Every structure is written in structure tokens, then in C-alpha cells.
Image (cartoon, chains in turn red, purple):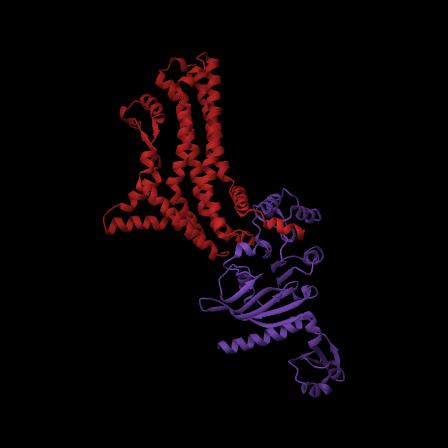
Length: 317
Length: 291
């Protein structure tokens, strides 16, 4: 056994690091299974709901053929967009939870002593955790979304052909390439846009002695309130609001106004929804020229470095 | 070859002095017991050796600075803390996969061999195993790493006597090869004294006793005398005297056994006797110093 050791040591370092890095990312998913189970469950629920809609409009009432084209498109395709958004939203929430727990849980259950007994640096450990929201989750979300959309469209195709409308309706009206490209672009830009939030949560999870969720949120809310009541301005609020809620509008352009209830008629709203969800156009020029993106990424780097320092100094709680 | 070398190692947490200028050298191939009461500084010393905490003073482990080079050090050093540090969600098979994936000196075949001797199931999660099984698992994983230094911190805490005995037997029979160094911090002095080559007592952040077991046998002896011979024995300057069951037990260091044998019954003190002497003496001295 001893003779084998020099061979082990002469393995090229870069290769060993990539291999260990991938293993360290995998281990995060052993620990935080909700990262893939939650979006997968939402996908299944969405799929079941969609099957119900198809059964209702084709099987029971057979009213599909009597609808307007806009309504037909909405019935078939709005659920696809809606389920896609629901999967992304669920996965994002699960990822927020993960980043808040990643460096906290290992100190709380003392397993940090086990992880630190391995020949892996704190930089390796923290970067592997940061790679979960930045690399692994976008990939997992894409795979789940891809197969969910595929299943939904196959179901729609079966329903259409059984009802005599014909599957070419899907080919004609569903923007396949645009949708897939949009999902990839959306996942990548969302990861970049939320990077400072993930990094901040990761830092707090490595820093807080208890209640990382509170520590992550309360100072930000306090800053908003202090600014509001001392300076009367809402700069922090606007920044946070744009960061958390405006991820989509930072990276996409909407060609038509979002569906509103101003028309008063629910049918019009549903018809317009069909148009809106297909009118979100990737706008990389706007996204990458936005200084807020780059400031956010810079902050993310700062928080990740701080998280590495924290992990180096912190033992079990 | 030196495995661990520390000079003037000092660690303070606020006003609390955890390590108070520790000097210690541990050669390769030794099995060292690190023994001290709670709060003596054992864990702080182990943390310094393992690069888990920065310290003032100098420390080299396997020629490396542990704080600056922990990840490199851990290729050749291995650490088993008390039984509760393996994460509860980890499956046994995943633990093996992960170590195989990240540790260049982990040998999967050896680990599987060790586990085959136990009743631990591959699919079990750590949280579903008994305390004793978790200790078996952690030791099996540690022993499957071809390390030069193994550090154990209270590895059998909370285990029943059966598992404790098995634990040390496995360590001695299946792992120790006279080249590896093992450092064990524990309270169970009596159980480990027969496997040790050296004993270090730590108290009040200082090393108060540091001898090899061979030295203990040659340098120390206990003399059991009755009242008549007590005065004569006291003139030979024992380092400690205690009174039990109507007899006086005097501890001597570096005295000729022939000289003592005329006064009463001689025996080699065991580690817990020495511990009581050195640690309680030091404790009162330290307490006096602080007051």
C-alpha cells in the first residue's frame, strides 16, 4: 500500500482538484435533497394539472375546436410557461435555503470537524457550495424543465391528434427553439443576477452563530428603514427590489405590455397571456451592459472571499 | 523523525488562556496519549496540530505549518473526533464514494474489508446507526487512509466497554505499523495505557508530564510502607505521598529500587496514579498563581 503512494501524489494537481470539486458538489445534493426534489415535485404537479386541462378541454367538453386561435394557443402553451416559471421559482427558493444552511448546518451538527479532516481547503469547500447555485442548479433546472416541457407537448400532441385537430398545431404555434434558448439564457442570467444574494447568504450562513435567516434579512430591512426615516430616500429599497424582483426584466425585453386586467374580460387576459409569455425576448446587450450586474458580481466575489475566511476560522457552534 | 514539534505554543480566547507556552516533540512511530482534565487545553492543542486554529508560537506537523497548510497536511494526517461528527444524513456507501473521490490516500478496498467485519449496512445512514457503529464506521474510514499521523480526540466517548475495547484492538492490530504516529486524547486512561508508548499530561494549558512508558517503568516507582518505615522513606524525598487503607504510598522518581526495597513493597505506578499526582499538583499551583 505504501508503494502506491508516490503514484497518488504524482497525479496532476488540476485533475485531482476538478475531480474532488465535482465530488464535493455531489455531496451537497446528498445533504440537500430538496434542491432537486422540490422542483421535480412542482414539475410533476404542473404536469398533472396540464393533463387535467387537456382532459377538460378536449375530452370532456370538446370545446377546444370552438375557441379562437389566441385562446387555443393560451390553453396549450400558457401552462408550459407557467410550469417553467414555477419550477424556476421553486428551485430558486430551495437554493436560497441551501445557501443559508450550507455553512451553518455543518457547524451546528459538528460535521465540519469531519469535513476539515479531509485534504480539502476551505476555499475548495466554499467554492463547491457556491457552485451549487451558479453551476449545478441551472443545469438541473434545465434538465427538469426540458423533460417537463417535452412531456407536456407530447401530451398536447396526443390530445390534439385524438381530437382531430392534428399535431401540426404545436409545430406551427409553439416556439421550440426560442423557448429552449430562452430557458438557458434565463437560467444563466438569473444565476449571475442572484450571485450576490447567494454569496451574501453563504457568508451569513458561515458567520451567524444562530438564526442565519434572520441575520441575512434583518440588517437589509433595517438599512431600508433607517434610510427611509433618516434621509427620506429609498435607495436601498430600490436596489434590493430590483435585485430580487426584477431579475427577468434585467435580462429580457417584453415586446408587448404585460397582461393586465384592464380589459375587464377574463378571456382577454388569458388570450393576452399567451402572447406575453412568448414575447419575452432575451436581451443580452441590456443585461451585460447594466452596471448593477457587474457591481453585484463584484459584491459576490467579496462575500465569497469573506465566507472562505469565516469557514477557516470557525469551528462547531 | 519528528512528527510533531511545537515551541512556545500559546492560544488565548479573550482572557482565557487555553495553551500557555506549550513545548512538545513527538517522534514518528509513537502512540501518544494526551491526557488532561476537562478544559486543560487538550482540544486546543489538537486543534493547533490539525490546523483548525491559529496559535502564537511555533508548530510544525510532518514538516508543515498546520494553519497555513491544512489541506496539504490532511493528505498525510487523519483525524477522528468524538463519535458525533459524521453527518447524520450521510449514507455509508456515500461516505466511501466521497472519500474515494477526494482523498488521494484513501483505499476503498481496505475500507470495505473493515466494514465487512461489522454489521453496518451500506445503505444505512449515519443517523440510523448506533453510537458504537458510528465509531466503527469512522475508525474504518480513518484506517483506510494511508496516513502518517492519526489524531483521535475522545474517540470512544459514550461507548460501552465492548466497543471501546474493540476500537483500540482494531487500531493496534489492523492499523499501527511502527511507522505511523497516533495521538489519542482521552479520559479513559486505564484502557489505553497498555497501547501507549508515551504519555503527555496537559493541565492549565501546559505540558506537566511527558514521558515514554519505558521511562515511566525505569524512573518511577511507588513504595508502600507502614508507619514504622515512613520517616526513613520520607528522607529519600518522594515526589508525592498518599494514605490508603492504613498504608502510605510514596511516589519516587529516579531512586534506586534496591534502596527502596528495604523499606516496603515496591510497584510500578500506573498512569492514573501519576495523573492524579501531576495534574492535581499542577492544578493547585496554577490556581494559586492565578489567585
